[in-house]
Length: 431
Image (cartoon, rainbow, N blue to C red; front, side, top):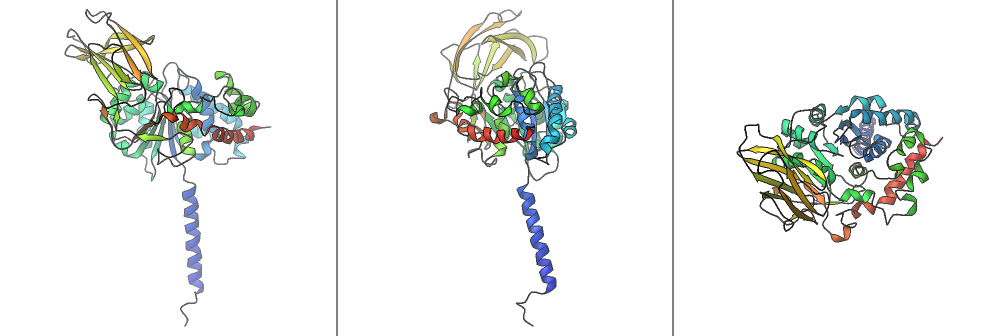
C-alpha cells in the first residue's frame, strides 16, 4: 500500500484541522481590547462630551467594560447616560455599518458613579461604586489586560489600587495628565509612591497634539471640522455643537486612539494616540517652610510644601489651612506632630506665587514662589518618586514640542489621518 496516498478519513481530519486553525486565526484577528473609561464628563471641561461621542462611534472596536464618572465639579454618571441616549437615537443607523456596536442598554448597565471630590493628602479616601467596578473588571478572567483610560481625576484608580493592589498585574493605564494631574496630585502621588510598578502611560502634554492644529490642513482644523464632516448628521451630531460651539478639542480621545492604531504593547512606537518614552522617576520637590522664585521645579512634577507649626488635637489629613496659587485655592492638611502639608502640580511651564490662609497662628499669610520648567521629568533629585520598568511619558526631543507642549507632535502628525477616518463614520449618519 502506498503510504503517500492520503486516505479519505485522513483528508477529512486535515480539512477539519485547517478549518479550526482558520477560525482561531480569524478570532485572534478580531480580538478587541478590553476598555474601562474613567471620565470627568460633566465636570470642569466639556471636551469629555466630545470624546464620549467619538468613543461610541468606534465602540465596535472595543469590549467596553466600564464607564466610571470621576468628575471635578457637578458632573455625574447622568452625563454619560445623556450621551448614550443620543447614541440610542443613532444606533439603528450605525448598526447597518458596524453590526458589532454594543447596545445602549449594555452601556447603561456598566455606567457607574465614582469619586466626586479630590482625595486628601494621603491620596485615597473610601471605596466608590466606580472604584469597586474597576476592581471587579480587573479581576475578570481574561487572557488580555484591562485598559483603564483615565480622562479626568485618577482618584477612583488610586482607591482601587489601595483596596486591591493585586489588580496591577491585570491592568494597563493611559492617563491624560497635565491639568488633571494638577487636580489629582494627591492620588497621583499615592500611586507613584506605592505602586511604581504599575503599567502606566502618563501623558501630560502629548495629548495636546490632538487640538493644537496650526499646521493642520484647513479642512480638518478644529474650527472647520464640524461644518465639513459633522453638521446635520444624527442626534450625536446635533449634540456635538453644544461643546465649544463644535470646535474640535477632545483632549482625552488620544487615549482611545492609542488602541485604534499601532501596537498598544509598544508605547515607544507610532500611534494616533502618541509615542512615548520610558521614565524612571517622577519629579518631586519637598520644600520645608516655603519656597521662592529662585527654586526651580519640573513642569508636571509634584511640589510639596510642608510647614511647621503647633501640634493640634485633630485627626491627620484634616484640612486646616488653604494655599492660593495661580488664582486657585488648594486645601492644606495637618500631617501630625506639628507638621502641615499641601501638594500642587503645574500643568505647564510657569512662574508662580502662593499665599497661605489659616486661623492657626504662624500659618497665615505665608508667601513664596517657584518656577516650573520643561522638559518633564527633569533632572533626578532625592525627593523624586522612583518608578518601575513600565512607566512611560512625553518624549523629550525638542523637535516634537508644539510651543511648550512636550511630545505633542507625535499626535499632531497623524491629525489628518485620524480625523478623516472619523469623518467616514460620520457619513454613516447621513440621511
